[in-house]
Amino acid sequence: MAAHPRVGVIAEGLRRAGHEVRECNAPLGFDTAARVKMLAQPWRVPALGTRLARCWARLAWRSVRGPRPDVVVVGYLGHFDVLLARVLFGRRRVVLDHLIGAADTGRDRQVGHGVRQPLLRAVDAAALSSARVVVVDTEEHRETLPAKHREHAVVVPVGAPDEWFAPEPAPAESPLRVVFYGLFTPLQGAATIGSAIARLTDRPIRFTMIGSGQDKQQALDYAGSAETVTWHDWIASADLPALVAAHDVCLGIFGTGPKALRVVPNKVYQGAAAGCAIVTSDTPPQRRAFGDAARYVAPGDPAALAAALAALAENPDELAKLKHASSTAAREKFTPAHVVEPLLAKLTELGFGR
View 1: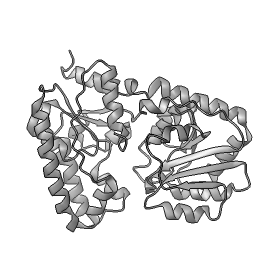
View 2: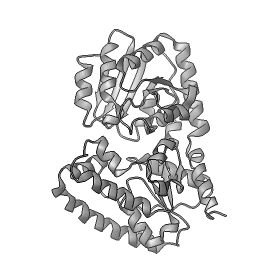
View 3: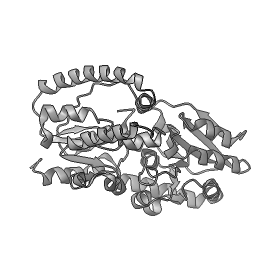
View 4: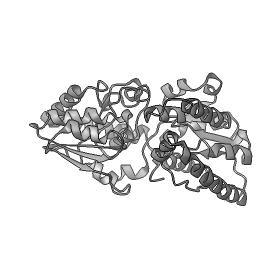
């Protein structure tokens, strides 16, 4: 769950609601980047099939050993596992967290040519048809589902794991400390951040950039020789909450693609939970989630991002208010217990949990 905190948030939320949660996990060993690479290099697909068969055998064995569950929640990236869950438990009991669509991810990772997109859409369609309830993260994401699946869909915000609420937020001070972490995909708009860094070298602002991925080199190129930024390939998951909490501002996403305009990324929820002020792109789902508890800039606009950060660096009182507002929003709406409420209501509607 360190690699995919969304799964842990839903599990913990269900526990907080008084439900018994049993975890059944057989790691595939391929992260999202590796799976996308297989799409670009189809000769690698047999390796996926072999590992998947082994994992399914372990999952099936573990699943039948305990009591029969009332509901089976298949975590995101479970496009294939949901097929197994349907066979083992029947469609009525299956909940699929469709946080990431296969076709959507392929487009975001620039795998959108030839027969690959139709194949990815077929994978999505099979997964959606295998579940009685489909969980998505925003209303905009729900609207992208085929019409026949929308009535079975429920919006559950990504939220933040409990450990992100634990660190003591750092007091606002100069220089302004800004952090970004992620996989440097087009959705995240890392090049926009790099360009903003280059515009702020003469301001009392220090950046910490964490992660690696397809757009990192472009972000490095755009930032140029700025000495106000520290780059990390990654930070251990257990250390990340405290490191983020030691900053004043957590950056969200700034991509301009369709997917970037309909998501609220986990780093926004997590950064707010850690007590940071949030600066992110001005999109309907992010405004709906955080309202006045964040600062918004036009997607893909480095000048606007630089101006927003410069304004916070120059106004410590405003920065302190924004940090408090984001933290309050996270604690009031985006803890595990809060985010699962729509899912619990949907399950009750279907006759579970009564």
